[in-house]
Image (cartoon, rainbow, N blue to C red; front, side):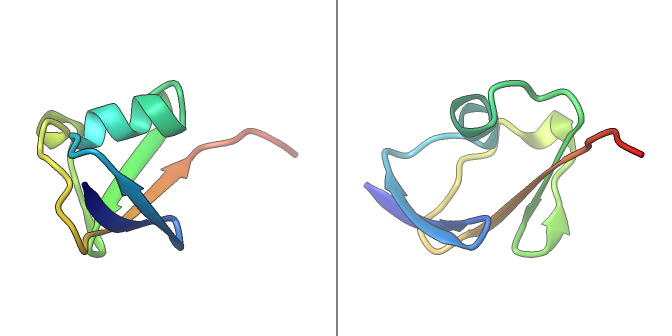
Length: 65
């Protein structure tokens, strides 16, 4: 098990990649940006595993007016 901060909430889960996390927690990767430790992670690197202690921020774009 790993423990990390996800959007301000501590999460404990099995080891997984950023891509798996987005699919599990957000559903769709469309309009999504991910930062780990304050650094934006390009989608091409989402196969990177999340480590215990990481601070992961996932932002989604929304339309409105």
